Image 1 (cartoon, helix red, strand yellow):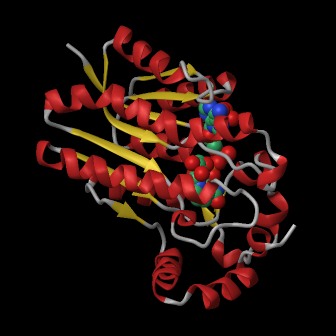
Image 2: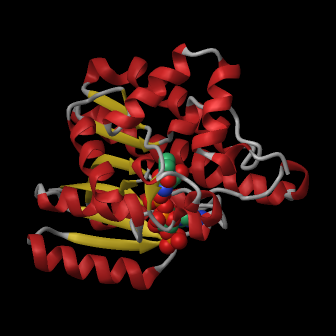
Image 3: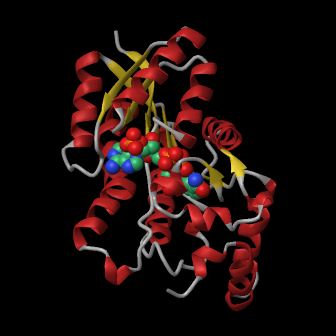
Length: 266
Ligand SMILES: NC(=O)c1ccc[n+]([C@@H]2O[C@H](COP(=O)([O-])OP(=O)(O)OC[C@H]3O[C@@H](n4cnc5c(N)ncnc54)[C@H](OP(=O)(O)O)[C@@H]3O)[C@@H](O)[C@H]2O)c1
């Protein structure tokens, strides 16, 4: 018989690592994936020791078009039934649009977008068969915010993922499958240093910087409840409310003060 598992992409650090911890604490068996095998191995051992759940990992680069299939085949060959798919892996390109190569942009869209669609495509059929399944897409407040002067495609791909999540809900809610687009604001992880935008993060006021543990806990709770879109923390709920209600010219002035790096003209 197949065992139920949660698959967490980008679980070698930050929000994904904390989501894996939170799910293991709740008794979920886990498949972890990211590129850094040493980190995955370390976390696997920790989770098995701390929570007595089954944990396995597969190291993959999601910018490689073959990776989603490789992850699916790995789960199939081991008899892991994925009934919770967490699409979390992501990064930002810290450059102006004209200075990146098309290859950079394609890889970026593959990791944050196409791999999410591909993994959903692979794992949804069995969820349909079992009339049960949950998907989490770690999106961003950037899905709602005015486009940034750098990271040109970051906001647009997150908006696309929110819309994709809505489509999953419209098509599959009636058979017991839900998709939750989780939209965090600034979160303290490796994201800003590994994406080369740590200076932007350093200029953000501390009340806007949230811990990855807190974001993960709220994200998991919202996903298990089947919420469609979830903005963690009261601070960012208010910010998203303002984005949706205050005229964009006024909001842009506000955001230049609070998130200066995002709106600098290069
Ligand atoms: N931090 C924030 O302020 C913030 C705010 C809103 C939304 N988010 C979103 O939150 C998600 C998680 O980011 P984080 O903040 O936790 O950053 P992080 O600490 O840098 O974690 C990113 C994860 O994605 C994995 N990853 C990156 N590129 C990959 C690739 N090509 N193939 C496979 N895995 C890859 C990384 O693992 P390896 O390097 O080992 O591959 C790592 O596990 C992202 O989708 C991000 O857009 C972050």
